[in-house]
Amino acid sequence: MHIPDGYLSPSTCAVTLAIALPFWLLAYQRAKRLLHTRLVPLFAVFSAFSFVIMMFNLPLPGGTSGHAVGMGIVSIVLGPWASIIAISLALLIQALFFGDGGISSFAANSLNMAIVGSLVAWGSYRLLAAGAPLASRRRVVAAGVAGYLAINASALLAAIEFGVQPMLFHDASGTPLYAPYPLSVAIPAMMIGHLSFAGLAEMLLSAGLVAYLQRAHPALLAGSANITTAGSRQGSSVRQLWYGLAGLMILSPLGLLAAGTAWGEWGAEDFANPAAVRKSSGHLACMPCRIALRRACPDWPVCGPPPSPTMPRPSFTARPLAMCCPPCLVPG
Image (tube, rainbow, N blue to C red; front, side, top):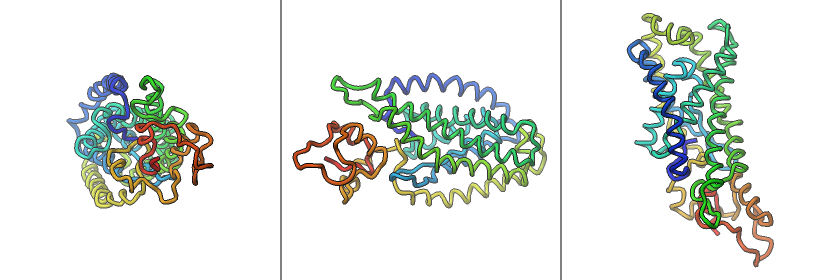
C-alpha cells in the first residue's frame, strides 16, 4: 500500500493533501495534551512498532507480497487521533530515509493507512467492544475484526487512487500518464491479497496484542484517561513493550525473504535488470498482469507461445507495459 512517486498525478497528490491536512491538525489538537503525560513512552513505542511491522512482508499468490500496518492495536491503545500522528510519523520516516513510499504521495499513503485505517479500526472496536469488561474475550474478537476491516479499507482506498489515474490522466492516444491499471484491475489485484493474507495478519496481530495486554496491563485498554493515572505498573509494561519491539527489529530482516514486491509498490530497481524480470517459461506469472493482458488482448495466451508466429504482440505502449507488473512481465 506504500504508493511510490510517479504513480499518482500531482493533482491527485494535492487533493489527498487537502483532505489529510484537516485530519492532521485535528489529530494534533486532540493528541497534544497526551504528549505531556505518561502516554509519551507508549506513543514512541507504538509509532516505532508500526514502522517495524510494515517491514515484515508476507508472500502472496501471484508473485507479490503484502504486510500488516498495526493501525488496529495502535488505535485501540492510543486512540484514533494519536494513532493518526504515530502512523503518519512512521510513514514519513519510511519515505524520507528508506524510500518506502513516495514523498509526493506521502499524503495519500497517510490518508489511506494512518487516517482512514485508524478511524475505521477505532470505530469498529468501540462498536463491537461496547460495554464489554476489559478481560472479556469479546474485546479480543473486536480487536481482530477492527484490524481486518481497517487494513482492507486502506487497501480499497489505495486501489481506487490507482484505478482512477488512467481514467483521468492520459495523453491524446489514450496512454496512461501515471498508474496504468483501471479500477476493474486495481481493486481485485489489491483486495485479493488484503482480504486474505495481509488482512489475516493484521487481524491476528491486533487480537493477539489485545489478549496480551488484558493479562499484562489491562489499563492500556481502558482509554487514555486511565493510562495517565495507571501508576507505576506502566513503567514496567512499557519496558516489556520496548523489549518486544527490539525483538521485532532483530527479526525484521526475515521480511526480506518474501519473494516479490507488494502490488503497486514497484520502484525503478524493478526495471533495471531485464534478466530479472524475464521468466524462462515465457509467461506472465503475476495474476494482475494476466488480468490486464487478457483485457488488452483477449486472443493472446497468458501462458505459452502465441497462437501463431505472425500474431502481433499486445498493443501496450512502452510505459504502461513496463509499469504493468515489473517483477514478472516478459518484455516483448
